[in-house]
Image (cartoon, rainbow, N blue to C red; front, side, top):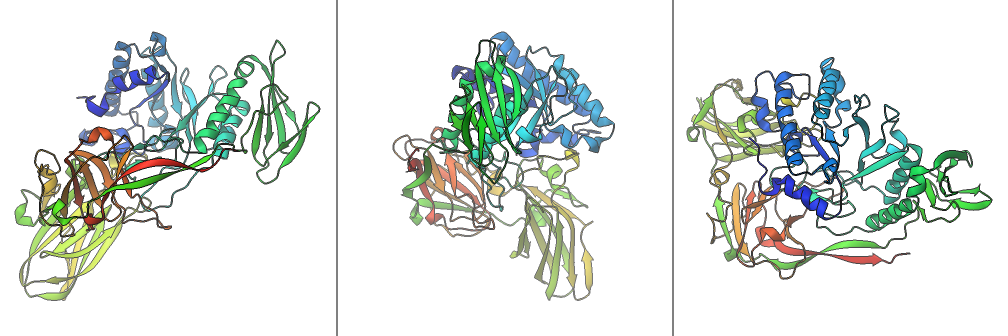
Length: 616
């Protein structure tokens, strides 16, 4: 079953791309990674007997071929391929498979060959590409992904294939709990120009050029809702200067050279130890030159065709007529801007809020019971981030000095013993696994131990993704008489939180929330607000909250976790609320709060750009 409704309407999206005069590289995958939950694969694949993802494996190939054929057929029926007059100029099969191919031994190369032949046989009339796949079979084009393809891309693996850069990373994607790494626009411009001249590049795709939002639970493990916000166009659609302007100037300079680049004869002339000129001469006397300084630390003065040129460190000067410098990659002339958030409404009145408190789930509350610890992704089928593992046991005598030990594969664990919070531990992107060790008090008689295991997105990459695992692996309690192992014991399970399962975040169930905010964990807090006037982008400031998920009028804004800060203290504070989610009045904000926060400090804000330095 395929669902292309709502935000999944890919046909309407591509038609809008065409209406705006743009082209499409359709990256079908179906594995795409993209910091998307499970790499874009559907979670139900894990239940298919004998399946091995991304391998010469019949169950996987059957489902992969079905999906690819479905997408191609949809595009062909709407005449969206360039061969039909549409905007799709390239299609991609698989994604960065060369990084994991060796893990599949002989099943890897045969899978690559099968995938290429399957795709080409669909007769789209446009080329197919495989990125980071040096052995892409003819006629599929091997493409480069990365930061420095102007240097690292070896070459097309056949002389009749063009050099293609399918992902030029404009920044690094953000990871919850890690510092943000910004890429200098001077480096982006240098690598683009170098790829075109040194690698004879004919296609460069920025990843990302326009940032976005991971609404709902679509983000992969430890990836926030805001995605690539440092791109040339930010999450709210604003041009981020000087990045946007500098790349615009680069494109304009390259465009001035385009005829000569496409038809001229290329030669390389050394200008110094780390300097050289790439010169393109047309048959009618046209000339374009790119003067390169590969020295990352020192400026260079060079002579070219009788004239002197000063080249900043690690830069390229573009001379569309071989005389006048139209652009230098290291000289930024665009102004710089900053995005400001303006508080419109502070939701600081307690009477504005209502609260639904989540009950702790004990063994007697569960209907699913097994004598083993379940792997979380199989247990939840990605229907929820939350899985209650709960058990009960008899204790002969009370013990105030017992120790609970839990080993988990991630990502967050909250422990309760006899109704009392008994510890919380979290992992990280690099180290999702952890151990919880907590002192607990045991009662004489029955003791209830509910453990709430929380995932923060599914994994999105790596070989044998079908083997990926999460959740609790072992549980022991050490008391005065020794260690009790509950790993293979009678466990009760509940997928999801009660309010989540009731759909309490939907507008239909909560049109008029009223009550008192208690600022406690395991709660769902609700408030009504009016949309800010005007058309400026809207965001909610959740900096005062802990961890959870937010909805507006039943639309999920994504997971929030402002309390988990990076080493330099950063975390995502503002969460994008598209105007399409809003009504003029009476908008319902719902927060599923896991660890506690202060909703009275939440505000509804608008975003705007201001110039902080003038163009040069």
